[in-house]
Amino acid sequence: MVRRKSTPRGYSYLFKGYSQLTERYSTGTVNSASGGLIIYTKNQSCSAMMAQWEKHLTKCAPKIHACKQINIIACKDNPLVFYSNHEHTATKLGYEVIHYPVVLYHKPIDPDL
Image (cartoon, rainbow, N blue to C red; front, side):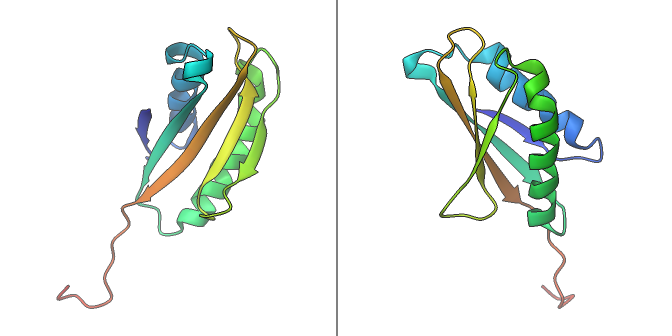
């Protein structure tokens, strides 16, 4: 699992982590057919950030994968999470990535908290 922090550098920084996970570090074999991207974020609106990340991924991922396409699947249990699927470059087998945000935003209404 590759961990990337969402920073002012934006989604291109996150995409580098995704690229490392899917093209550099994974073998794409039967026992290595999935991975995860944990996205630490301090954004006030995590849902908006994840929607933008999904849009960026949909645009950029086909450019790096040999299959030239990617499928996005919403998580039925968590609306902030989604899955991406593509054909692994080396094995031509399916490869799935879970995109999971960890919300670090903290701005208490009560200043004593």
